[in-house]
Length: 132
Image (tube, rainbow, N blue to C red; front, top):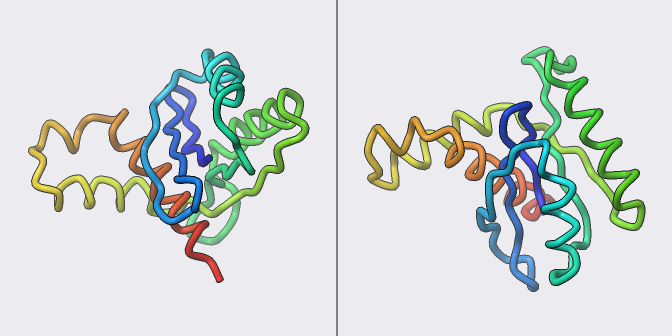
C-alpha cells in the first residue's frame, strides 16, 4: 500500500495479491486516515506501507517533509507490525497529471487534485514494485 501524503489529502494505492499492478484506492483527508486504515487492514492483507518522501532537486528534504515524518510516526505507532519504506516522490504529481492528460480525460480531470494524488500514489507503488 502506497501513500502520497499531503496536509489536505492523502492519495492511496494498493496492489493485487501477485503484486503485478498498482491501482488507485482512494483519497482521504489526513484526519480520517487512521480509521480508514484500521478498517482496511481488517479485511485486506497489507505487506508494507510505501510513503512518498518529498525531496527537492538537490536531494534535500522539502518543506513538507516534516509533515510526512509525522505521518510515518503515526503509521509506526498505529500499525507497528507493518514495515514502512520511504520512496523518493519527486515528479510523481507531474507524472500523474501527464498520465491523466494522456488518458484522454479533459482539463477538469487534470485539475482534480484528488485524482492527481491517487494517481501519484499509484506511480509510487508501481515504481517500488519495479525496482530490481
